[in-house]
Amino acid sequence: MTIKRHFDAGLDDLRARLLRMGGLCEEMVHYAVKVVVERDESHLAAVREWESEVNRMHVEIDDVCLKLIALHQPAAGDLRLIAAALKINSDLERIGDQAVNIAETGVFLCREPKLKLGDIPRMVEVAVGMLKDSLDSFARLDVELAREVIRRDDEEDRLKSQTFNELVHMMQRDASTIQRGMDVILIARNLERVADHATNIAEDVVFMVLGKDIRHGAHDGEPDAPASPEPPTATA
Amino acid sequence: MTIKRHFDAGLDDLRARLLRMGGLCEEMVHYAVKVVVERDESHLAAVREWESEVNRMHVEIDDVCLKLIALHQPAAGDLRLIAAALKINSDLERIGDQAVNIAETGVFLCREPKLKLGDIPRMVEVAVGMLKDSLDSFARLDVELAREVIRRDDEEDRLKSQTFNELVHMMQRDASTIQRGMDVILIARNLERVADHATNIAEDVVFMVLGKDIRHGAHDGEPDAPASPEPPTATA
Image (cartoon, rainbow over all chains, first blue to last red; front, side, top):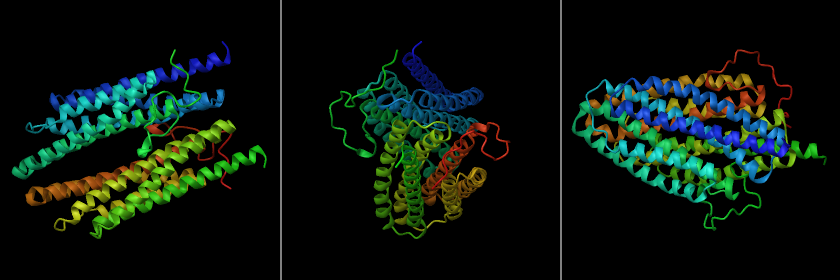
């Protein structure tokens, strides 16, 4: 195999690892919320087991990134791809942490009288959808999809505020719901953070493909064609 | 200047930028909490202004990192330093976001009757201390200090749980405090996250210096001398 083909195979391997890790994180969030919605504590064990797996992948992917840089000295688009992978890796690992928090809080809730969950089920749908699409945008270098993920974050924030307000009113009407209401609010915050991490991933994809930074409201009114002379190597 | 000296100057510049950004983040957290503790809304404007500055630095530092890699093709310790800088940069930017959240929630609290703040002042002290020391450990490649920062995170978690419990009891006794109590709990969570980011930074420092990953409870019982054949270039 030529060195170039070695490098391309390395990038494909890196992408595949990140997508596997991302898929596991989606499952984790899904099952974490099942603890709350289905009132079934047994999912906590699965979520914790996946967390160990995600943590192992996190360490490995960082290692793969550094080795690719050290061995192949990539430039421009390929270097941006690897830098994006380092960041996406951290975001995924933290999504795993959020899932564990949700499942752990969920176990407390299971043991208490049932409480209304506001927009939590809808929040899960939005957050997991954003995560899935941010990873798809990474796999396909799809800037339009990445931008769409970034826009969807407002919907998640709106749902969180709505849930927050509903629950505070409930707690004010009935003090016996305060402890549980707090728990549901914390879960809503965890889901909001999952959506934030998906937004970070989508922003990294835009930077990786276009070679320009759209974070912090920098200008992003340009056409969608890759502006950089060397976009990352396309997926095999 | 030789290429090697160019590279060393580049690393010094990178370190200096991160330390400046970190110093600004410390100030942001301090002033954000002043909004709550001193009941003085005017600090919000300063915190927001610093946030723009921090966001600008965030974009620049990522750019500096990629350029250093592309131009100088660093290996081993120096590459780990730059990878650590990319991650520390993200953590600092998110600490800035937490400070803005604290100041914004603080403004709501200022406009309501005074409420007891539990261990919030102590939480600020611990979180800002951890941030400061994590940055010092980065500047001095001080693994022992970094480990000490990681240990201190338990203290912050304990303070957060204590504040959380105190406030829930207060809300249960007096429903008129629910909205404000929730706000204080959110601020406690923000401070806990500042401490989490400082912990991430300290873990990156250990990895950078020793070339091994201590995240996720990986073994870290080795002596403190740099185990890697090539530790990062020391600070000028």
